[in-house]
Amino acid sequence: MTSGSPVVQLLDGVLVVTGEVNTDTVVGLRKQGEKLIRLASVDLVVDLDGLVTAHSAVLSMLLCWQRLAHQAGVALSFRGVSRRLASLAALSNLDDQLEGFGPEAVHPAH
Image (cartoon, rainbow, N blue to C red; front, side, top):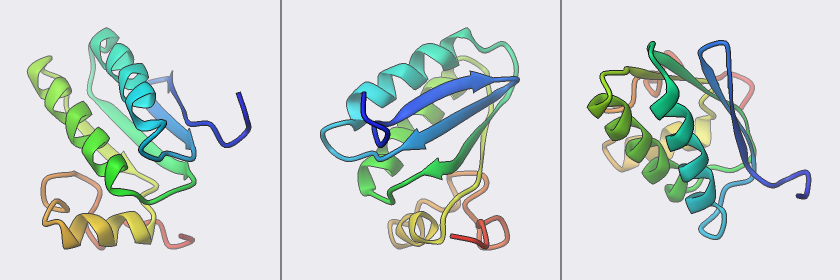
């Protein structure tokens, strides 16, 4: 695995997403996250601070995770959202659907 390959890990109630996500890597990452969400018994935070890319595939993956979590009775919130990813979500009218994507929550360093 190269250093840019995306990974998701569950650490103390936080799904930590790192690496570069694109159309070739998103499905594998989505499946990794789904396995972890299915194991969760408490609400989760998805930390996107280590995410290298802002891509529509990322938004699709996050919506899939959110739908699965909702079905399992687990709430997801997001932190470490880059300005580019937040802008993409806003352009797609998804920022209100993803908790932590509002302008007040966007990571200032991104």
